Picture 1 (cartoon, rainbow, N blue to C red):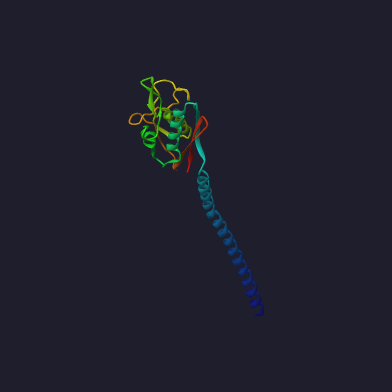
Picture 2 (cartoon, rainbow, N blue to C red):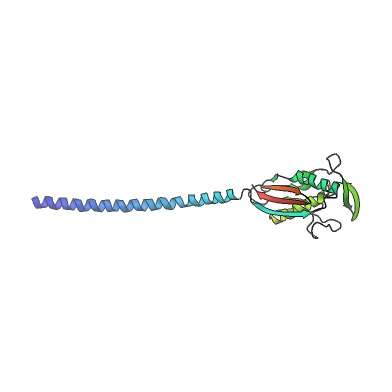
Length: 203
């Protein structure tokens, strides 16, 4: 009888040890499963972080030069540049240069300068604003935006190569681009000396 009790105790110890081992293995499996379950969360965080890193990133830019001594034309360029500066274009939205700048009239502060009419040079209010639209066009193209509308001038212009210009006339031809990105973008335009620089940045 005494031997039977000793055997029973030994058997109990063995079984308890096995159960403890099985539980321990199960616990390790659960912990591994928990770590594996956390991995997608970490990847998601990295994805969000990468998206946040796009904020402020310049997607495309372009610069052109003009003669500062042509005071009235330089004035018009600065005025149009200010009109498009810090404009935000939402995902899928189409930006219109004419709608943003508005009529290039004396009432709106524009001055007489050289413009092209049917291939001929004439004096007209807002001469020079097409250099702003052309600079914007190249920045938008470099940023990978979808160009919706663009027109060549009726004669070559000195500030960009042929086919790189974007002629505009309020109430007529326009320059438009669509933001094809899943995030908003901002147009930044500045004039320093005889140079206008336009960039498009992620928001």
